Image (cartoon, rainbow, N blue to C red; front, side, top):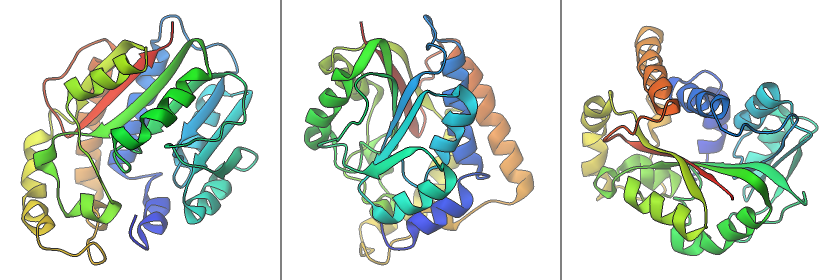
Length: 256
């Protein structure tokens, strides 16, 4: 990520409607898993960023092991403040170091698109090899190459995805698909319109001067409306509905 983006993320991710919506999707889907996760599961956040997801997973699931890694030392320092006591350490999804012998859940939320699938596939196989029987891998990824905008330049996106390409990743990893859906379906026209200036600018802006979408935070009233829409979608996704389009893709793969 560009300088300053981790600090900005750490400040806003607890309350920003988009991050809250993603955590709500995770909670809604995990609550309906069959078979469910075991009590006090062993969890790893592969690409933990600035740590809000680690804090959420601890509060929601009371794990017996909670680990997270990220290649950015700046992000790790911020994550340690948000999740004290968690096993937080430097590593990379392309060649991950794993401190637990077995894991019940691995989350990797908006990480894979930075190195891209080809570079990260070996690391994903390593992560899956540590999953216990019926262990889950959860992915959230940006959708559609044509949505590549200034935001992607700022956060160093290499690849955007389709539902079919994510299904192929899970199949290559030997995982069965429990959940696979686009997200932000209801808001998709608004997302496209809001991204239009950035779509044009992505072809011209330098990587150093690009700014992520987090620099444009909507007001409280609009944020509540956006979050309510996302939560309504999440309830459908948790019940197995596959939304036909959206700006993100949410997937859960299960090990046999």
